[in-house]
Image (cartoon, rainbow, N blue to C red; front, side, top):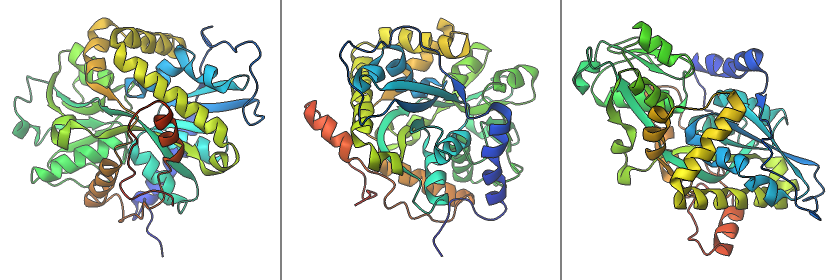
Length: 367
């Protein structure tokens, strides 16, 4: 029998998460058009499509999508085919939207991508590109935790059971020689699964002592008096690890490769502009956050958060495999067969056309 991502009682818990999240917020909120993404005169539809539906999170680690939407990169690449956006709060709800044909392409973290791929027996999605590395930190109350060893016995928040940061923190705890039951979060450290939106309030109230979280949540905690105790990038070779991938429905990839290529072209162009114009890109991402949520981030939050994220077209495939191994070690995952999770054919076509170096799938390609 093929290995699957969610096993033991964790299967029921993780499998229920998409439904619970969907019941709370539907498939994600629609992003508003701020007027920057106009269709060029004489533009034609790609693959005869009226629209391409793109999902992403309101996180700075999804900065490629934020900038791509705000600056009109996706709309320009898609011509007269409308770029439509949906904003998600968590990976499981985005995977469910992909499964139910509510979105076509999405920006998402590695753990939900692994979960979505393996739970469907490899028939649901493909990772078609990279987007970002880094942007994850352990932020703590400096009055309660003064060193890494002081984390033992404390209450540390992660965004969700089995999500990318949850797996990373559980692995780090294990490497300290401490024991935690992955499902309950109880043990030498109390792991408190808390939505990123309410983590700063939980920190202010004292109900948690710290959090292992992505940006901008980490910098929001610092603005509340927290201290960065550990940057996850420091735990990885070359300080690089995948935090955001680009995924697509396999059926959509097969039927509409020109549309997928257009979105990838826009992503590559957005990343190139981000890296060449970091300040302008930060402002564009913040403007899109304001458009999507009604509230921009203050400078004290976005400035340190933005500089901790590396935007890259490389999916850093070898690190995805390592993250899967961490989930196995934590007891959240049976050893998965990830062969076929990547199809980087179109991305490498785009990169070659742009004169950029091609990227590797670490032996996990579809062919």
